[in-house]
Image (cartoon, rainbow, N blue to C red; front, side):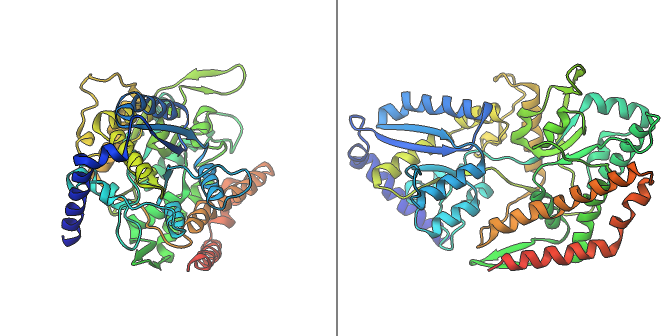
Length: 475
């Protein structure tokens, strides 16, 4: 409470200084502050962000003396690499931007090197109260509790389904959409779908996979959180690691096992690619990726057909706690002079006002970050919203309402641990699935081909290896 009061007092004094006589001296339309923003938005997300930047420059920016230049750096990985190259002043690296999109782990790396601006003094308490509490709290990752990331757009994981092919399967088998609410029942449906497609041909063991997912680290971390609590808990910069064997076995049983048996699959870069080729009909991915969900399945150069999409909340573990992943980078302001820091914050305040924030959500599939924007009725007809985006926003907001949103806190080695979790089970599943395919081609039954990989001893070897690799990454 004392910290909140102090922030309110300091913020009030700061704002009085700015609005009384300071702002005109700091920000001057005759000599605009030129602010650079780096992000990883692409496609419709980048187009809407660029429109908003142009609108700001022509209105509020012109009035106050702020000009924003935005640049997509490609992928999140490209953005992080370019930021670190700028900090290290590598040959050919661009100057560090005033603002960049950042997840907490990257922000923590940059902050430890002294390049992150603390932003509390630029806001009043009333301004901070506008944001969803959990989103704002994520930006207070440093030990002093200061605000260093402003939420701009958030996403959750959703289940996305090729309704066209699902309807054919459901009509024949009696499967229901409610069967996709838990990982346990989803795995049963996936096996049923494999057997149903296998029976449709004369060839044995050519059933098709039903399901795939992006972001395996989310599956591992959120699944663990639902079943046993935090895998990595952080307090005052110290990390505590737990890796319960029985919990990991459950995660293994409901991803690795159906994968090696052919019920799950991953072939393209993203699971939406696998939907497009007909390799799967159901996937879990970020709500922000729903705009990329294909409108047709292309089997080959000659055969294709249109499909419809359904979005639903991400399946959880039966009897697990109600947690869902909170994701989506916020915007970090780098340290500079008073004029550039103030200009950066003024742009971010404008960007996260309800009108702009909702427009970006509609164009991108991201969720808005203010409390009032999250109460917006996207079905009221005031905005033209494609059906897939409307479904995405409604399912995403349902997820936020019905779950405690979770994201890991920053700690030394956190990025490396997440990368390991992203790959450890997935790479083993892909490798072993290939072995199963070869055995099937040699005439084995599915049970014979996959039997070795379903043994407790096989899991235990993977478990001990993965646990040891993670412990080696911890401080």
